[in-house]
Length: 292
Ligand code: SF4
Ligand code: SF4
Image (tube, rainbow, N blue to C red; front, side):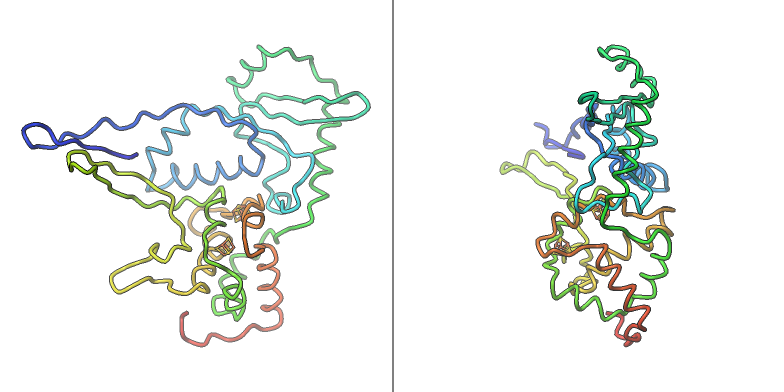
């Protein structure tokens, strides 16, 4: 809730106290999620439109990360440079190892708060072999990922694909359900909703998740700017992988693979990019001037 107000006995309105941000401990944060938090920090606290609600919630977060030694089937963080090694933005980072020496976790602190916690835990100092073994397990995980996105060239590819025939193909499969935006750790679009109770004496303003796949997302007088599924999928992937670089200085994708895992139509961002790339190489359909 962003704001609330109540009607006072004399008929005027009194604003409620803003909600105080709670402190959160984020447990089991994967390296791609650490990268996503960095993206959100840049977007929501780093620019002209800083978000005090987000900043209040981030302030004082405790982050306990877990490096990946076994990639999921949809992961491609290695190709995005966002994992599976955790290199910053955590208080504690854990790496699970299991070998003939037994099952154990290597834990390292990234901040003074993390060091304080570590000092309270019943741990033993890690040996060189423990550290090397954990690093090897994480490096091996990177080699077992079966998906990837090309590191560079994506902004150019998406810009050149603006009128690609491929958008019709994706739209024939995409349900425009918005699942991909709901699970993406870097999608940050929200809307606001005002509600009153039945008496009309109490009003609240809530911030709700929104999605660029929602028809109302771009509704202006006269209708939605992106009325077709083609236009909405193109907008999502072009912003995520292309124009995000211009706006925020990095990709909007951290390679977590959740949009692939949760798409009910089996649409895979890495395969769509590969298809666009192949079409570009083959000389995609020319701009038909419709600006679809
Ligand atoms: S989750 Fe899949 S079907 Fe749903 S909007 Fe995203 S790409 Fe389309
Ligand atoms: S676009 Fe897909 S793979 Fe990339 S960060 Fe979002 S959910 Fe993860």
